[in-house]
Image (tube, rainbow, N blue to C red; front, side, top):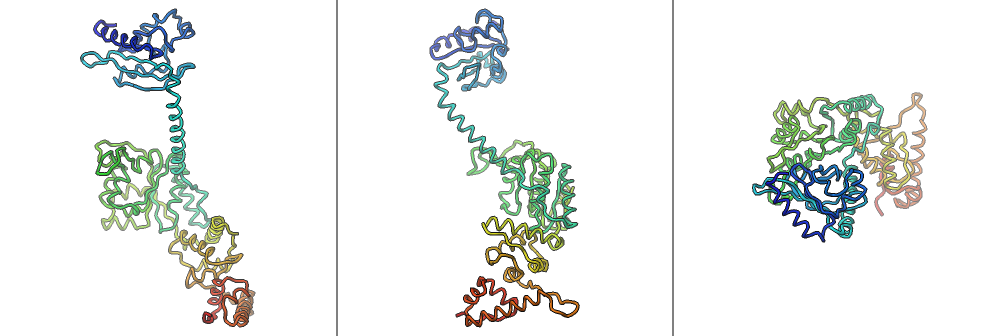
Amino acid sequence: MQSEPAGHFVAARALMEMIDEMIDGAILVDRDARIVWSNDKHVWFNDKLMAQLGLRSTAELIGQPVERVIPHSRMREVVETGRSLPLDIMRYGEHTLLVSRLPLRDERGEVIGALAFALKNSLTYLRPIAERFNKLQSRLTRMEQELAASRASQYTVENLIGFSPAMLQVKRLVRRAGQIRSAVLLLGETGTGKELVAQSIHASSDRVHRPFVAVNTAAIPENLLEAEFFGVAPGAYTGAARQPRPGKFQLAHGGTLFLDEIGDMPLPLQAKLLRALQEREVEPLGSNQVVKVDVRIIAATSRPLADMVRSGAFRSDLYYRLNVFPIQLPALRDRRDDLEILASLFSEKIAISLDQPMRELTASALDALRQHDWPGNVRELANVIEQVYVRTEGERILAEDFADILPGTAIQPPVPPDGKRSLVAAMDELERTLILEALEDSRGNKLDAARRLGLSRTNLYAKLRKHGIAPPPDD
């Protein structure tokens, strides 16, 4: 040990001896993290340890690297960084210690060593702290698990329902997109299931256990978009939090970022997004520091991006960056073969959510659905089935149940080739006759007529329209 800092070590040792009654052990190391002093009664150095080290007394510890006698010691870290560790919980053998570590400096401010001491009766001091620490740790772990679950993808390729040629092609492309790391651009009308497809791609990729973060560009005010994407530094503007707020890029680090309705993104933000994609780094609002990010981009839009590029409404360089692996999602009217399975699936789900028995769709009901053009696509179909459940009654879903929900939809019974009445036509005629008789017997009271027929009033009105019967005036 050099003579110059000897005085500093003597002063530190004297200080430790003065507070001897308050500590359960103290140690001094030099700038090379070698032990230069230790008090005699020391929880770190018991007889068993000394025997293992081949040492007869604590005096022989002098000059030993601190890690040799205290595995996982952080004294070297204090010496090398010059930063103190004023309070730390340390496990050493059977002991749980509350330890303070402080750097020693000379007159020039240079680090010449470090000292550490363990407080006496550490367990007594530690118990309330440890209990609170354990509670906070458990709460943090639970919140992290909940956050991870909320950021995980909820759908896989198996959730893409349909066996039409168009949907089989989509499933093939989704599986392929999961095998590559390039950007994916989902194109299709509103309601075709673009987010479901994006989650399926994420679930098919090697990022499946990392976050899936979705952001709808059209749903966020333009003045908040940059902060939402790139995050906010502490105090970036009046009212900003004191802690940094990560943006969607930081939240999706290592995983997938789904940019829905990308065609609605303002041009100024398009330039910043392009830079983030090219450089793989973002600059939080109000900060001069860049943050490296690793995200896989899946973008989606219902707007004609190619036309927007030609008109100057969308940056061509960003378009080419996103349009690496395009997937066109078919409209529901272009996959009518899937209507039956989709309608049945929604019927089952809605029945469960409403705690009702599932209602089977009749052939006439399916024919009515096939006649509709479905401008809202799969989302509209789910809405129509839910409306049927809450607005009509019966064991099955009939074509007339859609009369108020899908105006203009009507089923024309097919005419047999030989001119004879079909079973459907005969049943319709019988139904019309029974309705007229019930109205006559109830003297036009529609509620009484519905009871006689075993129908709800809403169903009776639907059947009156179906058969072209003018309803009698209200009583």
